[in-house]
Length: 339
Image (cartoon, rainbow, N blue to C red; front, top):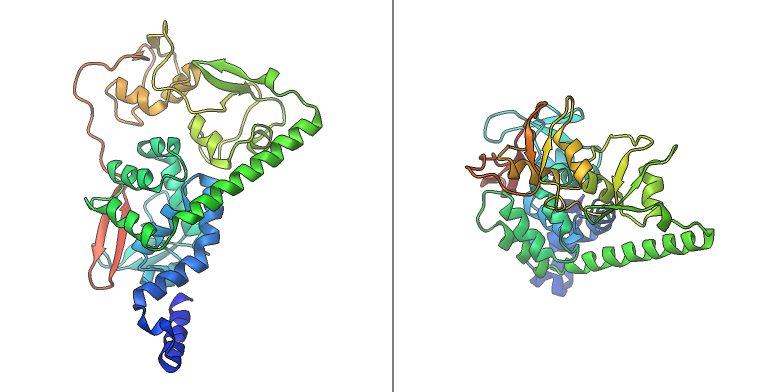
């Protein structure tokens, strides 16, 4: 573990008089954290689209550089509590109340995955995935703007950690690897002689395809040079969702409003906002906002949904999905996900 490694470094520094002796414990601990988890952060960037620098900075900030009690006992580097939808391992830890339930992971990477999945599945964070993956400042500010943490200096803290520790280089490495993989897939596609262009359709200036029999997420990612997270985000798909033959799958982000001429939609029996979003290539969260509905609000047959214009009135208040909770005694900073 990191704390054992840092102890060894201090011993060497004391007896050798090396430059390491002039470095603060926090600097050494963070260097070790980065060395141990940078490859996981890059791997997660390729899977989820969350910049490696952001993942590392949040992990360092919220787990006290991997040395919080939750990180040691449960591989939990982001202080995520259990909540009713958690089916995995658990550990009990004093926080706001005595003996609260926190998620326990088999590995640190599982903790990283859970954190990224939260960002990918939360509608309030969807705009982040339209930012450049190498723009860590925009991501940090976007997380604060979306209400990820209550700290008004949260973005500043993340940016400082990234810049003080040179974490941006891992964003560049991840972006380069993503481009290399795309180039390989493109070459493979060209060598196969298959003409994919004829299969791509357009709706509301957004490219999409119709799912063929036996196709799945992996095959579509391979065919259309997409990263694993992109199809899920572009289509508001659940991580455990299966594709069906004849289903529409968008290959690009949907628009903020429908094309000219599609002003209203009358809800049919059994139709959901996600169905309407796919029908007109309009982002689901934008439809909720235009119609003054809180995300997840059920709609019913006969309702008229505005597809282009914002309806007049007061937009519904949306509760924050997380709380940033400082723990003075342990020197850690943690956030809690609300249901």
